[in-house]
Image (cartoon, rainbow, N blue to C red; front, side, top):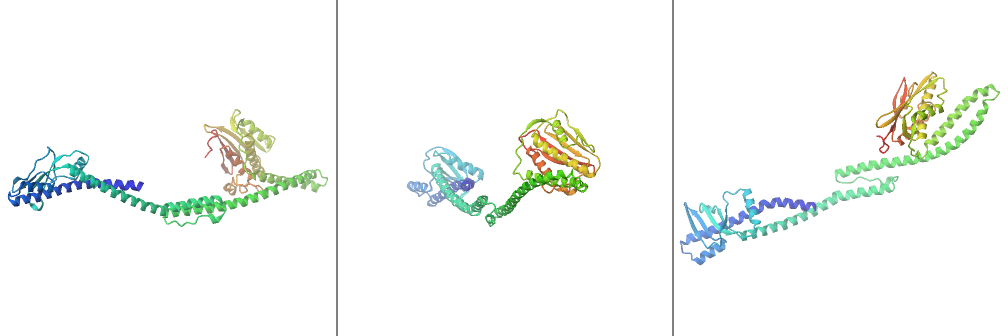
Length: 453
């Protein structure tokens, strides 16, 4: 349909000058016929009868003929004019716009007018020829010509549209349908590599799209396969960790009794054994916690942050700790909206990491906890005076099993903490980590409808 419309518009642009040219040719033809009739009259030297004169005028389709020759203007043929002269058209000086204007004036005027037409005689048979004609035959011929142009334009438009439709169907629509079919087929079983599309489009842009789709499908297929293998491995690890935790818990109960042994060798070895078993139990519990399908969505409630931080510090034995100083700079009246249990876990993990970093140095240190707010968010900072994180740990700080900063660590703590903060719509950032210590920042948005970028 668009092709038909566009071709018809192009034909309209062609029709406007062509109808004007048709009108001018129609009048020139009448002038030529009138010139022949006039020359016949002149050649007969007044021997033409009135009947023959009327026949000559009828054949020329004019009412009278005026011819100027040798500077003499002569009425050569004449007959009664049925009305007044409505207008005069001089074809000698008419320009394109004037011809177009006059053509449409005749075309849109249904009344039969008497007009005078002036032009040059052919073959230098004089200096001027002038005839009087009716506009009814002219308008009828113009309408017939326009109708033929319209029919021809419609046929050309339909044929062009059909050819273009077939070309678009072959070059664009069919390949696009093929791509859509491949996408639907692939979506049914994305793990099946046989359903990955094979690029074969002839159009360069479509072929590029097919190649991009093929690359994306292959990456997704490989990722799904890896995810399935990791899920199976995770399930197996979770089962092993669960059973191993139970075994180690039993072993821990028996190891606690060894501390009271009378054997000095056993008494010295017992603390090391208990610590090793405790680390193994902690590893199993962290693995089980991370292996859950997903953390439950946070239950956002208003809570006093200073009170929560105090509970975390007390739970991590920082209040009674002598070698580590805990500085809490949280406004007493600061009320935030968060899940108290999940935020407790995040702060507990950050404080525990800070304490372990300071303990590893064997020197006294300080853990500082501060908080505040602005118009868009609440922020909590946890910093320590430890040795800082090694470069390798910073590269994958929040990646599970990759961001461990201490020997024997799994890196699950920070991964879980970052996931819990993201569940609040916020983010957990590493502010700094150098020789002067490490500092983390928790950002919690006040607007909970839109997640943080």
